[in-house]
Every structure is written in C-alpha cells, then in structure tokens.
Length: 515
Image (tube, rainbow, N blue to C red; front, side, top):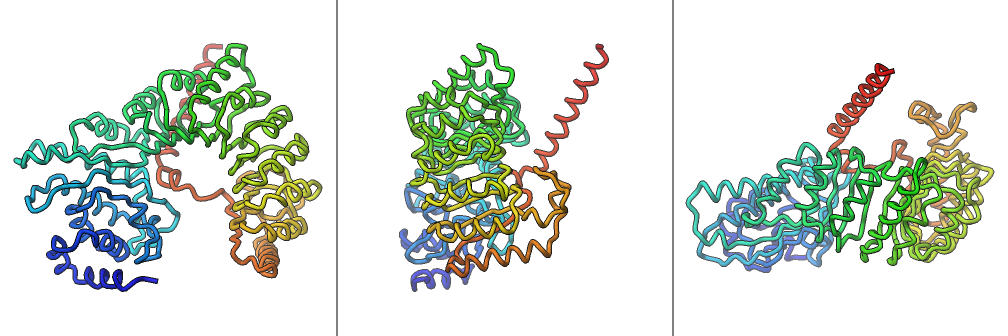
C-alpha cells in the first residue's frame, strides 16, 4: 500500500510544468521518491530533470525502483525505453550542467539492478533491453566527449567523475561503438564499469580485445555464447593471459569442449583449464551445455576448491564415470541449480543420479531435466529423486515421453514440495499420434491434440488446487523459456547463422573440387 508521502509525490508530478520548475527547491531526500513516482507514471521530462540535478552520492536503479516503504511495488523490471532513455539523458546533462547553485556529489550510477522480462508493464510497452542499453550508454559517453570539446563549458565539468556500473552485452553490430567508449574512458567523466559481460556473434580476436578493455579484474559474470567459435585451445589462451579475480559466473559456448578426438596434449590442456578455473576463488556458477565431456568431467572440475552452486551440463554426453565423480564431489552438497538435460538418466546412471539428488536435497532450488527420456517405465526415478528436495523452487522437464497418468503421479509429489513455485512440464505423450518418436523434432512438436492437452492440464491444476497449492505456476513453453538476450538480438543471430552456413557450404564445395 502506498504511503501518503508517495501519493503526495504522485500529485506533485501530475502537474508537469509546475513540477519541472519546482524540482530544484525540493528536499534532497525526496528525489528517490519522486523518481519512482515518475517511472510509474512515465514522466520522462521530469525524470531527465531529476537525474540532471541528482543531489545524492549514489544512483542505484535496483534499490530506487525496488520495494520501498513508501511504494511496495517493485519496478526494477520496468526496462521502459522512454524512462531509461530520459534517465541517461539526464545523466549526460548532469555532467554538462554548470549551475553554481549546487555541488555535484554523484559518484556511482548503477544500472545493474534492471531485470529484463518478457512483457513490459509500462504504458508504452517498449523495452530497452541489455543490448540496447549497452549501445545507448556507449553512445552517450561518446557524445559527451564531443560536446565537451565543441562547446565552451566551465572547467569544473572536467572534475566530474562518475562510475557507471552496467551489464554490457556486445555483438558484432555494437562492437566498434563500445570499444570507442571503453578506449576513451580515461578522458570521459562517465566511466563505464562492467559488472556482467555477455558476448555473442563476435570474432575471437575482437573478443579477446574487448574483454581486456572491459577491465576483466572487475567482471563478476562472463557469458560467451552462441556464435563465438571458442574452442579448448582458445580458452586456454584466454585464461592464461587474462585474470578474472572477481569472476563468480562463467558461461561457455557450445562445442568449447569436444573430447571425442582429444589427444594426450588436449587432455593436458583440459587439466590446465581446470587449474586456471581453480584460481577463480569466487567462481560458483559454470555453464557448459552442448560441450562433449564424456569421461572428462573430473579433469575439469576436480581442481576447483570453491564448491559450485550452479552447474549446467545439458547435452554434454556424460557417462557413468562422470556422474559417479559428480555425485561424490565437493560440489554435490552445494548445488542450487542443476541442468542435466539431454541425458538418458534411467539407462546411463540411475543410481548415481539418485545419489546426486540426495546429496543436493538440502540446497537444490532449480532442476532442469529436458529430453532425458523419462517415461512411464522409469518415472519413479524422478519421483524418488525430488521427493526430499524440499528447497526446490523450479522444475523443468520438457521433452520427456510421459503420459497423463505419470504426470498425475508426479503432480501429487510436486504438491508436497513446500517452496515449489514453477513447473515446466511436457505435452503428454498420449496427446501425440501413436507413431511419434522422441526426441521430437520441431515439426512433430506442435502436432498434438490441443483439446486433450488442455483437459489434462486442467486435471493437473486441480490436483494442485486440492492440495492448496494454487501458488504453483505450470506451463508448457514448447520452444523453451523466454530469453531476453536472444529475443533482442535474434535478427543478428539469425544473420550470423546464415553466414556460418554459407561458409560451411563454400568450404565443403572447395574440398570436393580438390578431390
């Protein structure tokens, strides 16, 4: 419930022209209150003036827009294009503002608390995602330098020094602009400080260069994804030449590791990478999906001294040796998020999987088991595995050939997990034609009996209601969960895939001609 203070702030900004003229006379401790009210009502012009005259030492978006005593509504997921653009425009004006009536105290401008969601609740319904924010922040820093050179400003402008904390997302399209902003950082009053760094669709040479510019010693999360052709020897060079002292989360692209044809030299490199990872004492999250690691998981993870809390091993072709190691490793009792998608658990390592979940039962919050060939004959493995995972918050098991009968059994177990809030379950096998085979391709995936599925879903929801668990959200996103980063750069990603395909065809043609 809003307090009278917040209601008064809303009333104040409702008269926009009066508010714009009166802001400089407002008490400094009311600026955060007014800013949140402006975000809620999309008062862009007032937002710009508020930030331009910001009287406090810190501007932390997550705290300012999060739940507060005056307004319990959390607005940190309001990545509204208009509001954020107005905010950054105000930051630029803050530097250029030469007014002698106040001293500039702002030292930290933190945008890392912005949460990107699928549906924007703001009125304009237009989001400024992480990639677009990276582009806009870099553009503003570059434009600021040009304005400082071209116009006659007070020398005090050059005394302003603000750390802009942000999560950068760089692709080929924005590479040059971001590099320019990072190169000129020592001359710009706005200092871009990268906390999380995501890279996609970028050549390795450019990847290594921009990571160096981004001050790797301050990066907490590094995501190298999709169209970055990083392989084991490239990763060795990266880790040998760049030190990530604060890194807590590392995501590597598909096929970084492919042990199928590894030589003794390659195995030695794998051990070296494990050793380099062990020097990252804050590393607790490792995402390795779609790398082939058969029989080599121990070489990579055993050197680590810090237990992993997040481990993604989807489609890594693990075998019983890998699972035996993992179930008995120091990581097992600390895992909070585990992805074992793409492994036939019942056939490959049922007992070790059960042991792993037993050890992780006191900590595990998110479990992902997509396309694991879990069907009616082996559903008990999942039942017995999760029944003691009392801290489980999310469970995703799309793409498994389970029927409605098995789903009803599972949902009775789910209802007894006290903090479970979200379930992604597959379209039941009995909604598909009898001759369908798993894993399903994209054509077969959507050819099911929609009416039958709706009826089964209603039955499953009824089981939850009868157990007083209406708080659990159930969904079947056929093509996976929403990913804001992929959504924002899908066109560029698609263009890169087409280019890669053309290159592969050209190489194949040239090879044929040489025969």
